[in-house]
Image 1 (cartoon, rainbow, N blue to C red):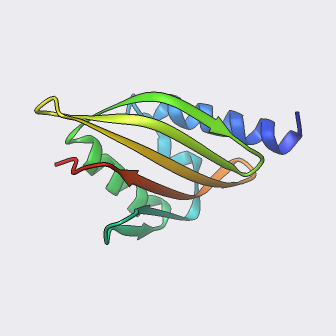
Image 2 (cartoon, rainbow, N blue to C red):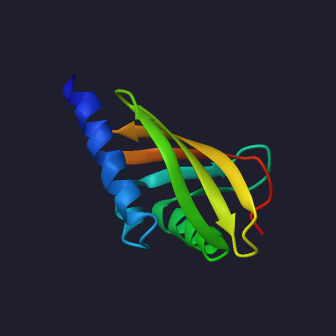
Length: 114
């Protein structure tokens, strides 16, 4: 297992521990991270803007992680967003990483989360 793969895997594991518990998940982002909801017009740049966007989404429900896969500088998760009305919205996220920081996060939702 390459060092880059191990670092990507460890970074994503730590991020996924912090994300559902509302920990400091934004600490895993680069300063210039880009977060986008693909197929829509929501896109933000920068750690603070990314944190605010994700926290706003999490205020609408909770995440249930199904699986995640890592490579040397990319990672992917499969998850379900459970809205407050208990509607399940399956989604996937693709992460780009540079070292131990997430530089991009692309979200592919199968429906609305609000």
